[in-house]
Image (tube, rainbow, N blue to C red; front, side):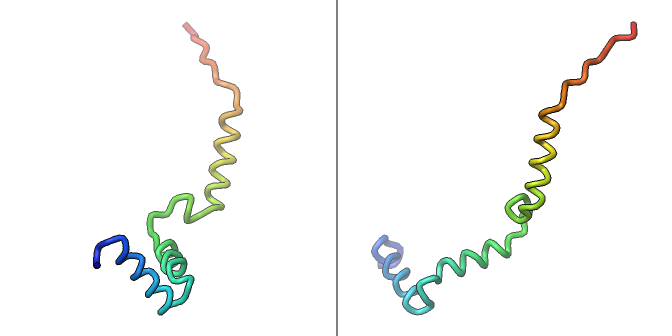
Length: 69
């Protein structure tokens, strides 16, 4: 039954029985911690700072250029 939906369910049940009910949560957390892509998901403080900058910039008045000629 390898490669079928029923086989997948059996494999998942076996993994949970052998390694604990939180098996998939633990391996998912390991993958998330090992991510090297960076970005806002890896650094929430950076996301907060960037959002604050964007909010300030979007509320500024537009600069009008006056022709000297």
